[in-house]
Length: 106
Image (cartoon, rainbow, N blue to C red; front, side, top):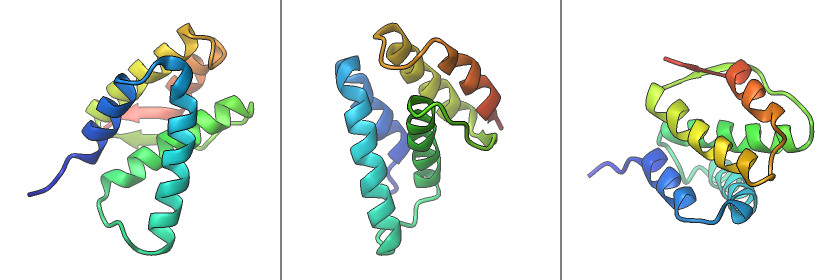
């Protein structure tokens, strides 16, 4: 049985108060890097999660990442998380503009 890891990731983030999301995203990014390094993951959706984690880190660091096309459902879910982070003051308001510049739905 194949697990929809992006759906699981988004559900995890939806269940966390907005103030805690950046920490969970950073921990997830570190876990994905380690899993990738040790070849414990093969699911193509993991790349989508990793890119989103990198986006949040880049916005927090006032950097940009290369634009990328992701599945429409991923982009919609990530946008919801970014909006929560902006509303909670965890990301600057400019994060939404950066989001639109970074992610295209495919």
